[in-house]
Length: 252
Ligand code: IPE
Ligand code: IPE
Ligand code: MG
Image (tube, rainbow, N blue to C red; front, top):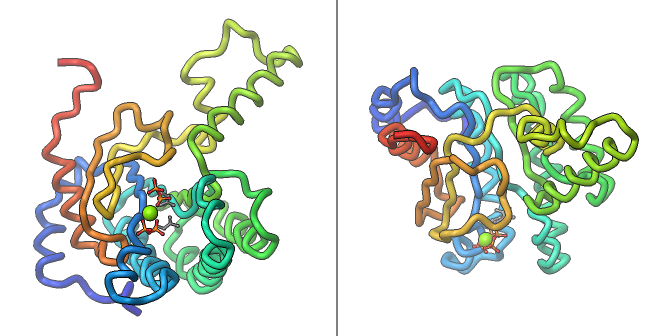
């Protein structure tokens, strides 16, 4: 029940410091470092993923409580299929477990679950759980929780182009009408606002095919902390850091 834990003194102090009128509307997180967290403790990689799920609970709850509108979590990339079958199986199992355990709480907290990625390639059990979660939370609107699952930014762009090309071929869209606004609608994120803040844990300084179209003007926050250790205290610090940035969007 860690996610239910009351805020510590330091967390309360950080929450007070956060400017509630300047919150990032959309936070995206590359949850990285589960394996290295486990290795450091002589534990199997799966133990790291399991601990990572606890942070997912904690961060989702904290974002909802703060009033963040969109949270996107990178859970499994199109490249992660390269991992050993055992690890993939345990990641899928953890996803099913998370949804089974958390769905009622998420629903009660008015969280809407949305998936970014091609669900058709998922094994049937996780696919079923995911569809069930989407269906149950479809009318919720406090926090939109995007789970990037079998997600790749390049895959997303190619898919969008194919859909768009089909529409042009069928004369439903004219070539002249294609612009940034229209193109965006064909991405998994649809009409959602672009991320304002992108967090990557574990010290890696790369994007790993995450939201490559949507992060054109996103603020980046990199931390050496491994994901299983990224508590809400770290989230609040990242938001405070974001609030000190000067976003110019090409202006002066
Ligand atoms: C992130 O942790 C979880 C997923 C990619 C699914 P990793 O499993 O990548 O952990 P490291 O980067 O090997 O430490
Ligand atoms: C990115 O982490 C994908 C997720 C967090 C789901 P990876 O661990 O797969 O990325 P690389 O391989 O270090 O670039
Ligand atoms: Mg990694």
